Structures are given as C-alpha cells and as structure tokens.
Amino acid sequence: MPQHEHIERWTKKYGKRYNHDEVKRKREARAVHKASYQAQKLIGIRAKLLHKRRYSEKAAMKKQIKMHDEKTATKKDKQQVKSGAIPSFLLDREEVNRAKILSNTIKQKRKEKAGKYDVPIPKVKAIPEAEIFKVITTGKKRQSTWKRMITKATFVSAFTRKPAKFERIIRPKAMRFTEAHVTHPELKCTFYLDIVNVKKNPQGAFYTSLGVITKGTILEVNVSELGLVTQNGKVVWAKFAQVTNNPENDGVINAILLV
Image 1: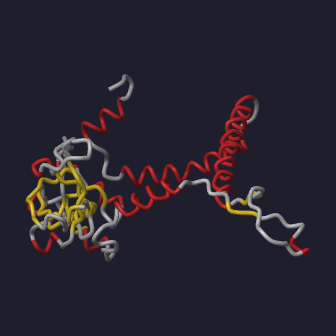
Image 2: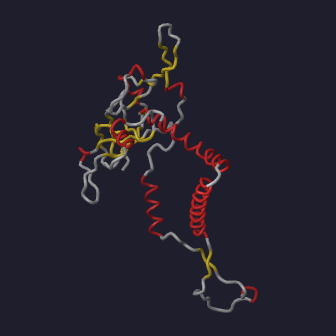
Image 3: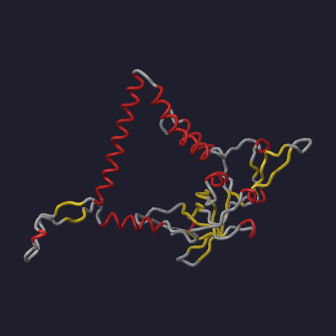
C-alpha cells in the first residue's frame, strides 16, 4: 500500500463506523451550501482561485451535457438521393436522419449488463424501524433507553470492535449467522456456503453497514469450493446471492445464487 493512505489502511483493517454512510450523505448535502457561502464571502486572490475552479467545473459539465444531447441530434444526409421527382414544396427541405453516437455493440453490452443484475425478488415490503430495533433499558434505575437491540438476523465480520458495553446497537449472538443455504438456479443444487459480506440490504444503507439480513438482502458468499471458473480460467472466489426467506422466523438463511 502507498504511503500516507492511513485512512484506507484503517478501513481495511477495522472496517467502518455503523453510521458511516449516513454521515457521508449529510456531508455531501451540506457541501452545496458551504460552496455557496464561500462564493459570496471570499474576496481577493482566494475568490479569484475559487471562481477559476468553478468556471472549469461548469465548462466540463456543459461539455458533458452537450455530449448527451448529441445522441438525439440531427445531421444533414447529403449522400441519400431518392429516385423520382420531388414535389416543389419539398425542394427547399433537406433530408435529415438521427445521429447515432453509440454503436450497436455498446448498446448490446448495456443490455447485457442490465440483465446481469436482475434479482429473483425485485421488490420487498418495507420493515418499520420499531420492528427491527428493540429498546433496551440500562442503568441502576433503568432510566437510560439509548441502547437498541436488533431483532433480525445479522452477520458480524471478524474485525476488532470496541467493548460491547460501549456499543449502542446490540447484535445478539443467537441471531448471528455466518453460513447460508445457497441454491444454484442452473445446477438445481443447494450448498451450505460461508457468508463473506452483506452487500446491500433493501431497507437502507444503515442496515447494510450493521449487517442486518432480511428478505431480499444481497449477500456475498464464498463459492471457491464449487469450482466455478471464469472464461479466462480463473477460479471464482465469491459471488452474490439474494435471501429469499425471513431468517428470523426460519432460523436459517436461504438464498439464490445470482449467476
């Protein structure tokens, strides 16, 4: 790893905070107001540097918008000559056709890519927060209610965490899962595979960072034992799978491999 990448090294070693995605979203939302405030208040050389940078950003954005508009632009077709006489009211008009910037191969690749990530369960019912989190009272007089216990199945990766008594979100050991029953749709076989990571929970990014597993969650499972290989002959180590049941009710995780 290159020098001075301390944050990246820390993230790989210990993971991220449970509210990392929420803090990042709020910071990006506030960035617009901060930029507006700076543009109004800065003076002197700092103002010149800021406006120069903003000018280049706007120029790049206009250029990108123009490239997108070119997809539906029209151009004169001088080579096309139709046989037969043209009516007098059409003599002053020139034939035009649509300029196709994207080739058919690129369009085909986009269709394949879109179809590649189709999931067995495209839509799931939203779960209220009160159903996922249970209020835990703490303290001598049982007055503190700041802790929450997750009532759904969870996956906790093996990285160092702070002591459990200092954590706000409690993930019970009885509801932690490390393996799942994954069905291969083409082979029609079910395998008991290790869970590598929780890729996306449809309930939100907050639940994804906590490792909560509900119906429709996308998991990353270890498929190295299945012997799957790519076109180049490389062994596939992990693939995505979608949870198809409610693990908290069944006691097991059932999923379908996304191939």
